[in-house]
Amino acid sequence: MHPYLHKRILEEVLGPHFSARELRIISWANMMQDRPRNQMGRPYIHFDDSAFAASESYIAAEYARLHAALKTGKRNTALRAFGRLLHTRQDFYSHSTWIHNWGDTVDLANTPEDAAPLCLDPLQHPELISGKGGIIWFILWRLPFLGKWFRRNYPPATDTHEYLNLDGPEKGPLFIYSYNAALRHTIVEWETVKQQFSTTA
Ligand SMILES: [Zn+2]
Image (cartoon, rainbow, N blue to C red; front, side):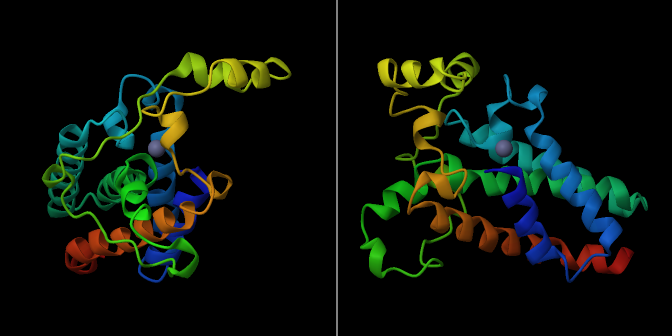
């Protein structure tokens, strides 16, 4: 999902619960997940490449870091861990086939934007896939002038990130459902830690 959308979700869900300074720490850690180093060889950070188990392990490891940090008074460390794990959780809905599969079963024109179910455990859904990366193609398709030619002659395969992603409104009518599900799942994650954060504020 595009960085400004991650940020918008964090502001909406966490804005009322953290100071502006703390929200900035969470947001920055969240958005830095998309830095180039994390785009190559680390698909689990973005729920890409069908690395569902690795993505869940990553989220669990960041939760462990968060709890350990809060116990030892390192609140900023905890805030950063929270921002990072929320990025991964939010990307699930824009990078996997969860929303696509659900979208095939409903009449989108008559379906409210908060209707898509949350996926609380991707490992229980063997039918899911998420897109394969491909940094070279990503660049070729975006070249000035030549990009159009590459895209026409070498269109993205249906199992690629390029084809499957719902990263922003430009991806069509399914986008709003993935965005809304990411927002609601962010609330679920917040509920699991709000007690710990409020007792250490
Ligand atoms: Zn990402």
